[in-house]
Amino acid sequence: MPSHPVSPTRLPSCVIFFAMSFVEYNDLIQDGDVAIVYLSYNSLMPVKVQHGAQTQTRYGAIRHSTDLIGQRYGSKVTCSKGGWVYVLHPTPELWTVALPHRTQILYTTDIATITMMLDLKPGSVVCESGTGSGSLSHAILRTIAPTGHLHTVEFHQQRAEKAAEEFAEHRVAHLVTVRNQDVCKEGFGVAGVADAVFLDIPSPWEAVGHAKSAMKKHGGRVCSFSPCIEQVQRTCEALASHGFEEISTLEVLVRLLDVRTVSLPLPEFGPDSSARTELDGTEKPPAPGAPNHPSETLRTTIPHREIPGHTGFLTFATKPRC
Image (tube, rainbow, N blue to C red; front, side):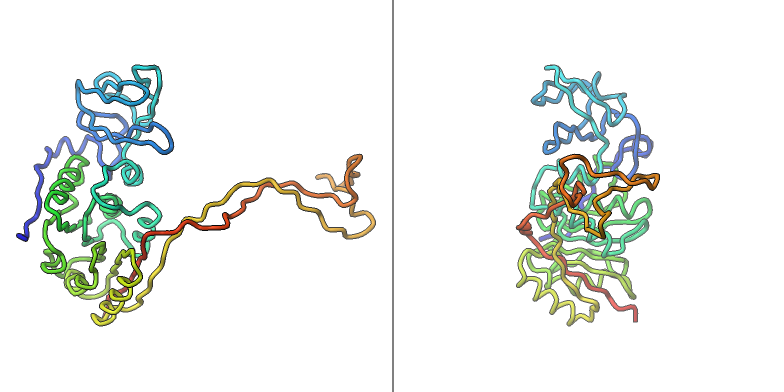
């Protein structure tokens, strides 16, 4: 497969400065923005705002010229059938929920762990493979802006081109370079520059050497996401053979809790324990018909008996500083 960066046409710098961006907030909705339409808790959709266009929803049509352009992000918009929606400024978290799926994606729980464990911050240089649907890419770009850079590699040509197109629409193209190539054979296209490397590919152990070459001479962190423990084992062996240290694997699970109202009996400390104490220190006798041992009613959480399974493991390692 030929190796080449995918370079979309960039918008004029004046438009980038004033318009919506995934890494900068703007108060007003403008022509050309990508807005997130909130229909319900489980239903969000991205909309490319265009003068004269309409977007159909189950609550009716949204007219871009009158309902969106010039309105504040977060506004409640009434649709043509009388229903209403909220129009939100795009963020990586909202994009993860609303994006068009071209591949399986990483969700916010894993993304937050990756961002922390890779020690990403403004100015960081990151290498990523594969780009996929761009869920993690947008979160990385928000974290490393305004001076960092993301080098992302996607094996599939159409997916690479679509990702580059989306980065341009979202006004973050100046922070990212998209390459269409096989990272296991050709690497990331850079050497000695990365503070961190992320791998989400079928055979990450084949790219560990390229990851090490892409990283700065001393230090840096690498993360590999794999759905199978056999992939994890081979990746850990490859990391160790290339001199990486502090190798660890974890699985991030969301623990659901139900809110319950419970009644707890108060302990008995003597013959006067049935009396309740007011805030001013005086004793309050128990209510008529109350049990001898008073109780306290409170709200607490009860975990589910079963925790939903997960689809992948995160393996982290550190490149030695010496």
